[in-house]
Length: 583
Figure 1 (cartoon, rainbow, N blue to C red):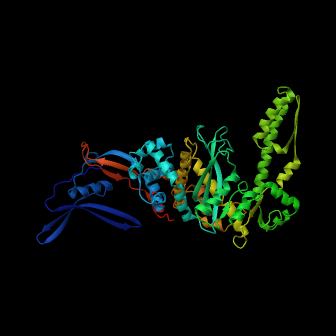
Figure 2 (figure 1 turned 45 degrees about the horizontal axis):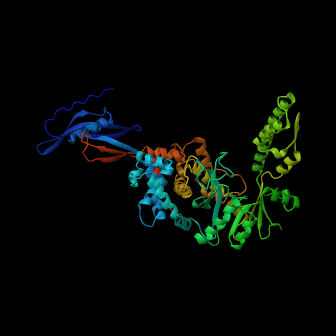
Figure 3 (figure 1 turned 135 degrees about the vertical axis):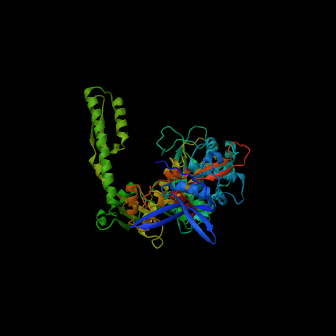
């Protein structure tokens, strides 16, 4: 429907628009009237010139503004947009960095190198690239302008990385002072990342956790508080064994951070007998777990009796093989069922593949013990259940059978694990000992974020040892900022907001999301009906807040000014939560 408005000259007096509302039978009615006010002798009278209620509200607003004397011209004739850069995601990351006082962590005094490191940390969170690509990317957003690094090139970034490595010890001391406490808990775990290239002295072949066969790698260990908030990172040669990296962390806690009574938590492959002896000498607490062979020995010895789990899923015991230690035995029936199901599925899949090989040998299409052995080896190692099969191979035949005794031995340990610690019961209960060991899952989540789509530590392209160390430390600082952002945004994402429940729930039973979190996951909606986000989609939503640079059209010498997109409800809430971050 087209609305035609003709404003006729009035017979003197002031013309204006009057808006009234009234409620009738539960509905609200709004009326817009064009009125003229004039004086008739000593009286002021009003005359209705027309009814504007049929016009859309924006048109009524235009009439009101025109009557006030405003000159209404098309926006394109008033100003033009000469540049538009995504700004909201950059603003959120920099806001978190300000709340965390990251600049003070990097340097006591402002300096250009610290600004470049800040820019690289922010870029790593928003759009992880190589250093060269980063200097190209940050001009497409407001990041370079906000941190005054627009003129920097990749060589400047490399120099800033060298500067960062020189200050790593001091930065980690400040982080430890913030997040670690005497008599508190510290988590440590090791992972690896692969290289592109072969020139770095740290690059070596080792236990590859990335599934990249034939790639050189570097090992690096992350030290964090109980929540998984990172405090320090250490880099090692790619062929360094896990246990040899653990004791340097104890030395770092004592000598570099000045902490004397911290409890270190590491997995069963990290804390061995030699490490435990040295930790006792340093009077440091530790929590780890027994290996499967050690658990089997406890079962065979009768010290660990399965009927004790009939009424409870956790109990504490002692054994002469582990002097001055507490052992906490746990059995998770749900985990036992999962492991039994997985083992049966892997055995069935391997049996089906071996049946095919046996049929090939019977038909004569596969012959010779060497060729048969190679083919069988590929099958038997595919699902990692070779220990459950007895194989018989010669030049003309192949047979196999299941070793039920081995299967039964392994099944006896399904869902069973034993936590060991040298910390006295008066300092930490059996339940809290198990919870502390399970806190290592926080580091596993950190590794997933650091190594995959979030921060992309890998692949590593640097060839100098100091640059590799600086690169990994830079990624750790980026995770430090992102970790706090994720915690702040829990109510807007699919994360569980009931964080305190972890401290009181059954330490052995499988972890369960709260009802509110399950509802968010099932509906993909927040309680108010708006969409629930993950961290990256929330960043992308914020990126639609754009900073537009404008000027008078046709005048290239005219001064420019900026207009920023008004945030919507969820964007406004995301900014509020970032501004509420506290240390």
